[in-house]
Image 1 (tube, one colour):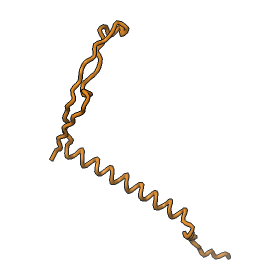
Image 2 (image 1 turned 120 degrees about the vertical axis):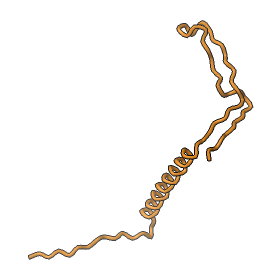
Image 3 (image 1 turned 45 degrees about the horizontal axis):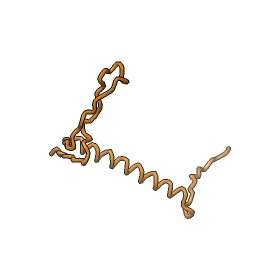
Image 4 (image 1 turned 45 degrees about the vertical axis):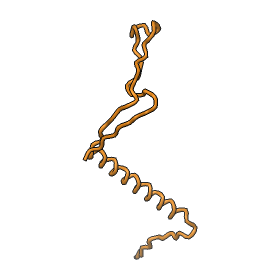
Amino acid sequence: NDHQLDLTFALPLFGDGIEYQNPKKKGNGYRVIEGSEHTSTVISYAEEQEVHKESRRKGRQRQSAERIKKTLTSPNSLTTYRHQTVTVE
């Protein structure tokens, strides 16, 4: 159940770079290495499931924080205090 993703760009961005004529003296010049417009990658099913799991966790944390913020800033919210009975002798 892995996903294969094939990417194509208008510019040759994949694998491009520069190669120095003399790596110790970079001022001597370089050569441009042309890249490719195409590449593909595989996203494993396990990796995808982990991403979904993390997204759900982050979403729950955000929802919980928003709920708490809404409760604390709501003008109609009631503050409850716990009362304890104390006997003094």
